[in-house]
Image (cartoon, rainbow, N blue to C red; front, side, top):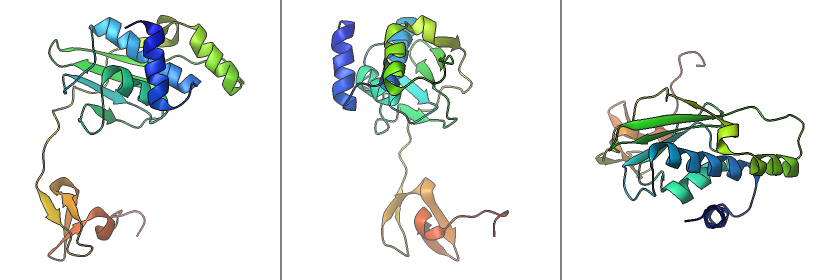
Length: 176
């Protein structure tokens, strides 16, 4: 599919054009080029996004990574960085956005990212994290307090009761 049609697909998914969407758009196409990727209908392709900004929508629209499918994960560092893993080939890449000129308006930022190629925008690095395991299925448990069901990995046992995270409360030895 030509780049203009891919851009329109990303914009339709996201809802508007912006610099952030352009970052994810450029990262997605660059990763596809570097790793020989196509749209992922399964967990063959995995993306770990280090932010939850607009660019993540382009990754979803163009590469088929999604939270529900288990192949879009977040490692929140606040960085405009995306790690892509192709399970079949074992290839992976981490794309880290280079600093842009400061003081730009939203419109100037959009124009800046639209005017530059992925090769100009991103540093290509090795991923910091190993390829994640496939998504697991967990048994479900009913919370003894609220009656809502949660997966086993989000359940706590307190005083002999099965509690969801909301009802269990936080445990922090530094802020009692």
